[in-house]
Image (tube, rainbow, N blue to C red; front, side, top):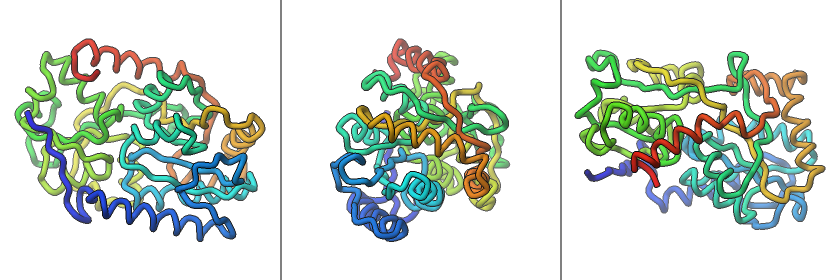
Length: 313
């Protein structure tokens, strides 16, 4: 089966040239907002050398949406640590892991599936994870259009489906595991698969009738429902996965202990600071808490089962 990649200008995916242009514009915009900082996302120097904290976010949102969602958090970190911050947005989850591996970023917010890959390669411990509804957990939502007649995952057989990133837990690995549990390979279960590269793009593909089902991150879906209700109107959640450890924030290998501890203090103290609490509320999370790798053991187990089933390598 052919995996289709959709490149619809200004709608589903950006062409590579337009993406690079948007990324450069994004970096300049964030730099301007941060005050007097002169660093750019192209800098390969770590924070200890430049004073700038480079923060990467995997492709859970498109670049435009990532700036909107995370800009206040980055400004807060800059204010509290005294280090200017620069947002780095990449085209895939794997690219964020590569930046971590080669010293190209200082801090990263990773999908839990991407984190397991980073841990396997780099041994990175998580710094913090967000808490929502009292626990550092989130879910994969299986979503269809209202009125489609598809009310159970099994009914998606023979229909087009959108995955987000290839190593996304909620957007790809979980629905793949459901298909395997039914005795199929994804390529034989769905009529075709669209790789949307972000969760909001998956939702757009569903709304526009490109696919009949998607799997999305519960944090992102709930955020969109609260802040942009029209973006998910006419859609139904037909299945909610078991809970998984929330997407962690990690720091690069070799980050000075003092800076890592400073980041830990700033992030875990946000909920007791009125300014920080307001930002958390906009992100629809309650607080950040320290966590360890054991929170993600179930993710590793799911991935191992997909390797055994020859779905992923």
